[in-house]
Image (cartoon, rainbow, N blue to C red; front, side):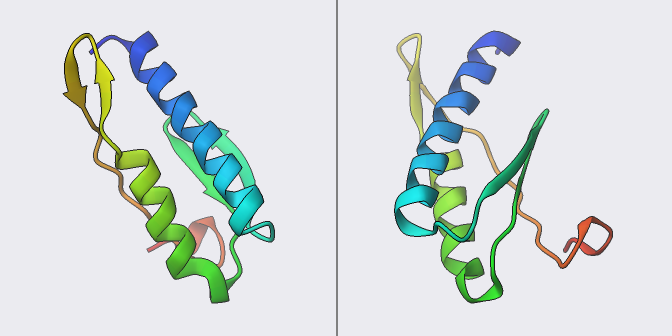
Length: 85
């Protein structure tokens, strides 16, 4: 896959994530989008639900040139970047 379509698919997912966070988890903002990584600040009480939804949105199959494509997503969490698991 070439980079431009992958970036477009990622941007669509980012919009969906931002919309969902605003409606369902307003205390969990999307802080940073850096290359292929997203950084969110999520209170522990919402972590499980937000992780599941973000993963579902990011891995949702999309149509591209008459094919269904999806991308695997790896999630990490921790109190700061140096302690991500």
